[in-house]
Amino acid sequence: MKKRVLKTLVPLLALGLTPLAQAEMSREEFQQLVRETLLEQPEILREAIIKLEEKDKLAQQQQFEQQLKEQSALLFASSTDGIMGNPGGKIEMVYFTDYNCPYCRRLNQTLLEVLKTEPELKVIVKDIGILGPDSVQAARLALAAAREAPKQYEELHQALMSQQRVQAAALATIADKAGLDAKALQAKADSKEIADKLTENLSLFRSLGLNGTPALVFPDGTLIPGAIDTAGLKEILKDKQKS
Image (cartoon, rainbow, N blue to C red; front, side):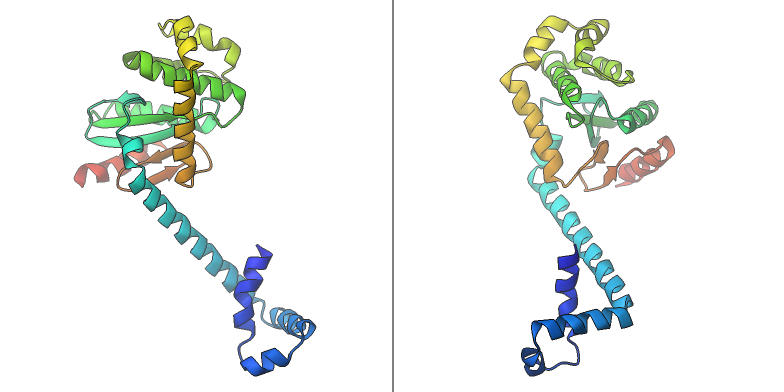
């Protein structure tokens, strides 16, 4: 960060010096000039940092929009994702989640409340496992359910979300209670096909510049990082219905 700031400041601090004068200064003299100028005008540093932050945010937004466009089919039209709500709903929303993320559990409750009054909402769940081995195994089990028993996926999803902490050793019991064939599902979860799907989800997550769960993404580029309350999400959905 310091190197980037100084690189940005050098031309600013050299104001008032002709190229010839700069060439005649030694490295030590120029560094001393930089130091003295910063001490006398510390607001220059603050302004430069603000400018850098604005530039970084713009670059991140541009990356997000570009990747959203390029990866649109994988994000919104994959046939191998778990679905919450209406599979044919007109309002689509991708939901990146981890079963051991407390904020994901909080957002899950918000989604349950919102789905009661939003019949046209289709939540495309992108299961990822970023919080350790137990999370990876839980995500693989959910992805297997999305393939093998899509109509029961949401039931398993809610069963996993209801746990305070999902542990790999308990996955078979959770699947059984959700009415699924735990043995067959686990065999599918251990397959290369599911491993590849998990890798795909993680790649999408990272390509969008996301670094934490939960995250909601809409086709128009709206991004909601972190948990949002019911009222806030309903307000956003109201705008989507108008467009």
